[in-house]
Image 1 (tube, rainbow, N blue to C red):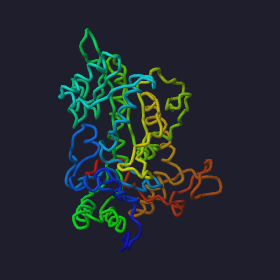
Image 2 (image 1 turned 135 degrees about the vertical axis):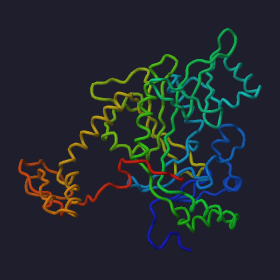
Image 3 (image 1 turned 90 degrees about the horizontal axis):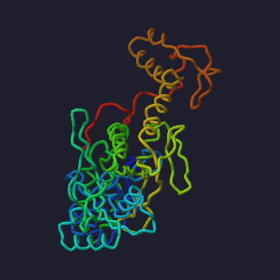
Image 4 (image 1 turned 30 degrees about the vertical axis):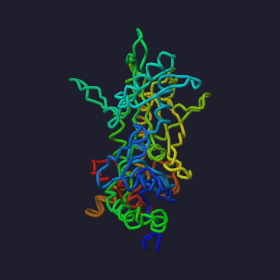
Length: 420
């Protein structure tokens, strides 16, 4: 059996289905096949301590991550936020935001569990012993919370709201709150064909599902297109800045943005290739020149990825970096550094004007020759940049060695629908 289509190795594969790895190596167990046959989400089920089905639409049912070469190396890209909603990530974010020492044991539970009297009694006992207690709300474990709109501000909802519970006057009381945002990625097109292949394969080969998928990896790439990087950053940026500012309120301890390594790598150009500074506590800082990290820091970026090499299923989440930052610093890199770099590429040797010249030449060659730009000493070059000289030449003379032909799939422009 062929493991790929004859057209060559595809770039994008469904890599986790109902929480269990199917690419590049299938991890198939009795438990994983049971989850896949029943449509159970292992992450929601673990968080709520009761079986929960996958919440995605039929076209994307069970798809947790997509493996893509979009950044050059093969990486997993999250397409469902519940894939990252592990107890470890929520606990780590809670400890960071509320400044709880590592030596102190904390208790964190979904808000939906408070309906059980046994959980409420347990919380009272923990608070009486002085243990820090937190509850969290999200769309499927208590409902999303949001800041309502006003005449001068929009409504903003939170992926996960973590709430401190304190003992006051002998009874539990609500204290401060923090925010956890989990960044996923939209993909062009739909996963419908790949999902159908997996569903049919499981139906026809239940006893040999793992080996069969391993022998037919092309099933996982059927119709799967690449990530919609630019539009996701454009949609996320304002919300990120807004939520990083909420830590200024005395009832809000701050915000953690949990972002997959693949998405973080893809955002580097949008942030102007920011420079990170190592801190003595093992974390990093992303700051504008001249700014110092606040203590406590109200804004964090957690960079993580599923461990595709682990024999465990589901694959464990690995936290790669914890980056302290603030809204002014993110604004500096995204709105000052990145645009400055873009400006230099307007009249660069093979920049915007070169593309304009190429397009105009299709309709009016003489007009195209009026578009001029400074070029490096020694004439046009390809694949490297030199210091420009003062002289200008028509871009039509230089464009022959340019490999830029126009905006790619991830150029920042209008929104495109994502059926996945």
